[in-house]
Length: 264
Image (cartoon, rainbow, N blue to C red):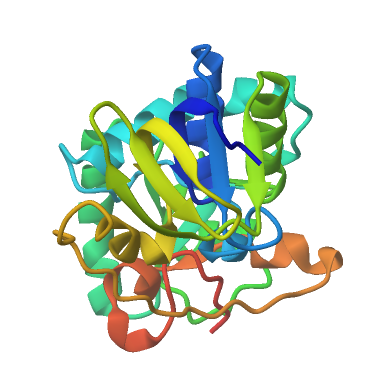
């Protein structure tokens, strides 16, 4: 596979993050290899990606998450257009279903503006229902986030991986990294497809990131996976379900995640 060859970077994990990092490093002219333990890329947690391009309107202020989302807003649209990746600015609503929800809307708008998402605004129930007539009339109001968008969630990492290959990256699937050791100037990784030598190893193992970290040290973090639920509709229902409910971001007791779409 790569016996006798020393790579500058070995990326472990072929999901969205792994493919993006591989693309970035090969763009710098580095010799890179990506190891994915499954038979295909984007087979782990990334395969359940909702395809929502989040503006970061509710991200914690001064957080790394917000800085990444702000940078992504600068890069995404031109990248998608250049590489013919389907995306659509659908907008999104955070819907209030009771008076308690309604009271939280101004705070959401204020946080969004502080996060640099200046076009977020509160709308009345009548304006909401004018834009989303299929929504339950029990809605009391909403926050409208025009910049929320949808993208083909598989095309993005596959495109990044394909570009990386044209930039001389090596991608090996069915390649499970089982161990490794640090030598003087590089890492020797043990894998199900033979040894790999690289100067730097980047952990992009997703839900197994804490396990991979133990190759180097006792992991300072623990991943506790949890599953969400999506209701999948035909394409003809697309315009009907382009909104989010406030319980997604602000009420764990209501049983849906922020990226879910709920009818009441």
